[in-house]
Amino acid sequence: MADVLIALGGNVGDTRATFQKAIANICGMTQAALLARSSDYATPPWGDERQARFINACIEIETSLDPHALLFTLHKIEHKFGRDRARETRWGPRTLDLDLIAYDDISIQKPELTLPHPRWFERAFVLVPLAEIVPDRVIAGRGVAAALTEISSAGIERLPDLN
Image (cartoon, rainbow, N blue to C red; front, side, top):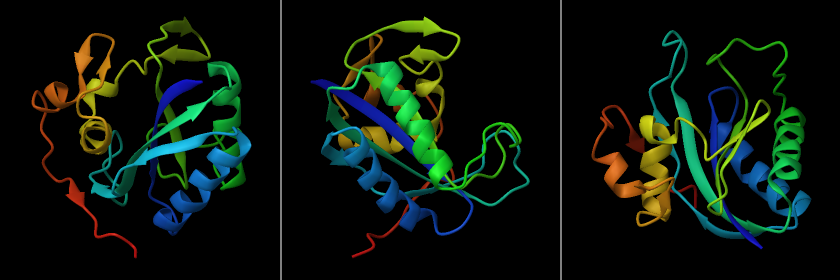
């Protein structure tokens, strides 16, 4: 079984409800165990700043799917929730974005999949929720909590629990 970190994001529709359903789909479709789930965070948009704030979160799962099969499944789940990668604007509005951040300590560099995610340590919207659930995790030689101290997390707001 592999220990996997996945980042979730979205800014179209009821993103927090989408996250709940998407996480259930991830666990069901990958036969994964949910090990941890961060809080939801409201975050400033990245890239195209002329859009609604995003909601971001991270999960840690355990799965036996290989990285390519897992990525394929994550893309199917995004599509199920209304994302059309072929027609969207880069860094634009989306219903659901699922990014594979790390898969055990595996390193892959292929056109369709790079692991760990090549920009995980540059993005506070990933690091803040990651630091909540796996602060001591080391990814590609960098500690999550340490990486967070190197960038600004201005504008990121932890949202109250839904329950």
